[in-house]
Image (tube, rainbow, N blue to C red; front, top):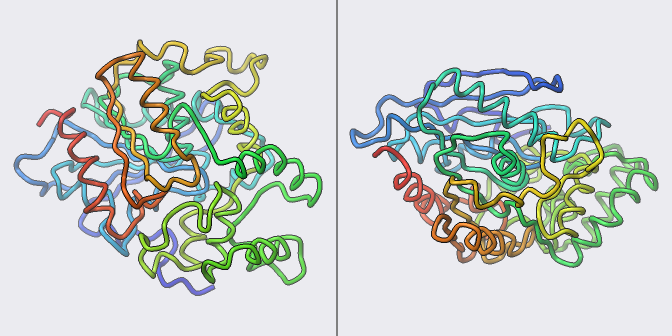
Length: 373
């Protein structure tokens, strides 16, 4: 398959020193951190501050280093934050885990992935301040770690689209309720993949992709249609078309940025949507005894300031972050902030062509105010 932009390319961060840091979780998965360092950051930079970027389900660290426009890693480097890390955890499309039948839940990530990643970072940066920018279910799971006490000592968090109060459109709620069982037991498909159109003709994967595209006449990119089917409710659901560059909105590129998805994660999201807040999937499983049944139970005790970001056309997690900001502001008045982004959706605040003008300055301002500058 021809790729106009190479898969897993580092072309978007050519001026950085790149080092890769593999690590393992306590449940025996191999994960990876990538460190991007620039020593020529502005004199008024933040040398005592480290930024960790966390992707969402089906995506990877590639969403932060895209070469087709100004990416978040490069923007942070240019703005004085010269030590930026990206995490590829078990939801990353750089690993095979989302296409295996392990039946992981969001609790696994909260208990194992984020604590192990922070331990590895601390091994290299010591007591320096760590800030986190997290997206989608990467944001949900990181907040689960933070609010359960599995991770601590975080200077600030920026949460894009959703955090601890997942909310979705009615059509997405119906898909969450029926989709996993229908697909696993009705079609025998344990995962969904934006690349299904490229499967051999007349196979189940190919037929599903063709059926989905029939209901999405808004563009010609099959990966865009599948992603709308996989997440949210809209045409398209994950972003506004006008916010992406032409080179991003291509079947091959979209499938590289947002890959295959294990269906079992939907079951945990469904339980959270029904509860109106982040909750444990299996309260009777002794493996997760250290995690709370309700992740908001001790919300007032978490002193990390959070900036909640959401597009005003968020067709995946709707007003989740608006609600979460309201809930946490009652628990800890004045600690957290909210920015609603006009004309943006779910993921385009981080991968949009003009995000460096419309969105990243909000992130930068928040980081500066909670850094050592």
